[in-house]
Amino acid sequence: MRKLEEDTDNFKHDAVDRSLSQALMKARTAKKMNQKQLGTLINEKPQVIADYESGRAIPNGQIISKLNRALGVQLPRGPKKKKTPAN
Image (cartoon, rainbow, N blue to C red; front, top):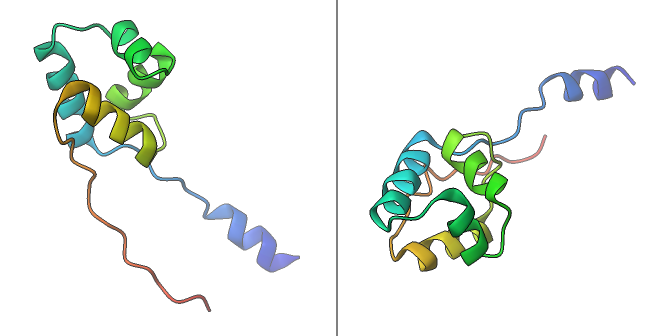
């Protein structure tokens, strides 16, 4: 039981990298689109776009791929995590 409590105390999910947020905003404005238009284009809610641009979203490879195709850019995905062996 104690191990479970210790494990949950350190839980932290990934967040969108700042470089991705800035690149997304720049690419979207270069295409003269607002968040609602981009969301509609990739079949996502405008709030998803807002979350990515603000850095609140949990990164999702499928959404990033759809954004890349819709905007015609290659958005940065941030540093890759190294896998650590389980103890």
